Image (cartoon, rainbow, N blue to C red):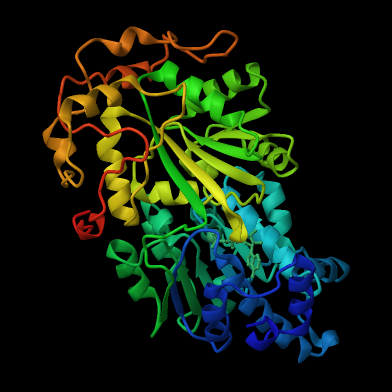
Length: 497
Ligand code: ADP
Ligand code: MG
């Protein structure tokens, strides 16, 4: 299959060739012709599968084809031109609301900027198409200036867009295409009312395309309300396979063990660039600082940073000046940097869906990637939740010299039969991985001379390390290559998430 056979406008084919894409991805193969034909779409496919182009290429095709058939001199004046001619007629210039033809809603600013950048790339030869991002955190005058250019394509986060709609700066009466990118995430973030309001302000005749990790539940309900006879495209199901990403779990005894292991893993020659995920903004800062002291080019990325700082960090990451990005979930959503070879979960995500989004930061555009979760023993249950969601088992691995003390003890003491894992085991056995010998005081004991540790005894999250000091005696994870399931793992039911 080629992009030519998808029936795209020649100006877009040129831009695709410049982007180095040789053939469409599966989601593009299915979505592009249907979207060109004007169908509404509901799409779920894994991160990194090329969804941006799946909605943007057909939209650009439509605008480019329409531009071909319009007499240039008869084209509408932009609000700026209107203003100028009003001035020359001695009238007071009247603000003209922007009338975009396409709106893309995204959950985060980063993602919006990324979609805009991709749009600029795909429309490089379609001179008359302008795309702008309207984002929270951007100075108001700058936004007004962008809107006054009357862009065809608006990429926006819902909150800020509502402000502009309510003050009459944007008029959606001529909107032809509405895209909800990462709709599930927007709902998670509480944007449902904003989205409903925005949708209600657009014409019934619009084409709607919705992208989401899942099309079940709340997202599915909304999707059905706002689309007409949609074509449903589900690639690899809602739980994505990520077959190009090697996933592993390393058990750690405590924070010091975790920090030493992270340091060790980051020094691996196969790490080009990496993202380290933390649960809190504060940890992101602390760990980035520590890694910098340890000699890594590290930087934090989280929602408390100003937009300018976030953009600078992302630029530095793209240019390779930052090698290790330490980020929280929301900030890292949608980051698309091909040189990211590794994702580390310093903390596990709160929701299994976020695990999928996190590991999707690596293995972009068909490359291979590695995703490693550093998990303290009490978090085994969370690993299982992730496994149920992704319908995949994540192998447990052990690095020589970094063996966790507890799982060794647990596996010796429990002598589990192969296949002995049952759903609920870990729950019923408490933390299940502990001995009661007080390993919590072992911080740093086994660190080799000259090896840096990131031990932070007073940090608030130190307590999460000690929570793993369970007294349970059963249900241990075994050592290297053990899994939570077994050879018969395919009998495990994943329906109970
Ligand atoms: P998604 O939204 O599905 O997570 P993106 O649209 O962000 O994925 O695309 C992921 C990466 O794949 C981007 O770097 C993009 O440039 C690249 N890409 C998209 N389509 C193709 C293609 N047909 N061939 C090669 N690379 C592609
Ligand atoms: Mg995307």
